[in-house]
Image (tube, rainbow over all chains, first blue to last red; front, side, top):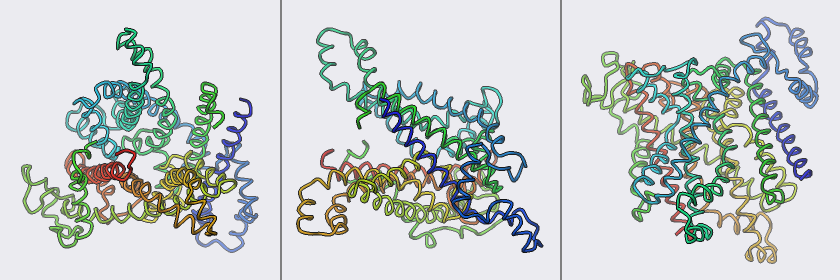
Length: 305
Length: 276
């Protein structure tokens, strides 16, 4: 068990280093920052001075080591637009994103699992066919567009819900539901297929011939087994929701990490983008690490794969 | 699911045909020049609504440009960008997957670690990172699609290569003194055809959605081009007065993606004897 955790931990560190290399390379690709910082009439000497003060005259690997060291101290430089540390800007936006993502996650599970169970138990019925068709259709629509259409319907036409911003519960409904649509479809599909697999198992036939009621077999025995692939999906789902939130936040002007990043791209505010990408990735890597370890504890077979 | 209805995949064909025809023959069939400005016909609604004219079947935007003509031009942009992006992703991903699966060891380890890194950054953030580094434009979209999807090919192809290389015909090819390159391209790659074709089809749809999303947030295709994502983002500010501007490009995307997804499902069933 110990060596399993150490191995996973090592892989996580390697992945974090990989992410920092990507971010570092992209920063280099984005061009020479000295031109952003200097007036147009700067002399050769001015340029040399500022390059020296920024450490741009050092070899590439020295620059990378400095970058990594700064990142470990949470220092991503100052936002070009707001003149405050990029890290502070990003951290201030985290609560809004967490609220949106977790709400969508909750909706996905609460709606997706029952739909999957219904679809599996009434296989090939009208309700199964409808649920699956809606899921296929939903996965073919761009979710930012669904968001706009929901705004059109519920905010512009019916005027039931606010169209944008963050405030009370009513502000959360549209963005959270839009973001959750993808999750509902994904959870539904996995629940359905995993439950269908259980239906064919011998133990179900045995319990049923023993005289157990269908309801008891379903709730006490089948769902417990069927839920494992669904739990395994949850980590992937959370990562997808965090990514999806970027666009949804932009659509609904939700003041989270995503809309900050989108604003920063338009303003070429590179330090902020770096901070957001690295923080999000580190969070996802740690999330996957803990899920892996948790599954390793629960199911010893995984450790030997 | 839907596709088991018959042997010919009618639904995907019906959904995809307009886009392909629009993309190939756009300039010959659009009723107006997509960029033609006509202030006399600003914000006309679709023909079946009050105030609509048969001259502009789907209505016009705030500059009087014909929405249908712009949708047709958008099909061309959508197809070119999505096809290029997915093709590039397949090229890189298949090569990486073949190398990882066939050579194993250090090669496999390095490639799979790069896949891990890619998987731990959400695609959209990676795209934004690239967009902010090389600027907005078609190149960014193609690069974003390739970078987002190559890892899927790498994983699937690696898995299949691992089992294929244990098979007798690969052993025999080695005995016959074939080079690694020849074994990979002549003996292993042909057996991966079905898998790759299915994956490409399914990813075309996802690439189209990614393209629209990137363009929507402003780092993708730039005006005055009539990309569908761009049309949706232009329509956002006019949502309350001219809903059709944001709605119809979305329908076009949905129909195309649905068509690609259903075609992919059908191909998987048709090409995989195990499913049949």
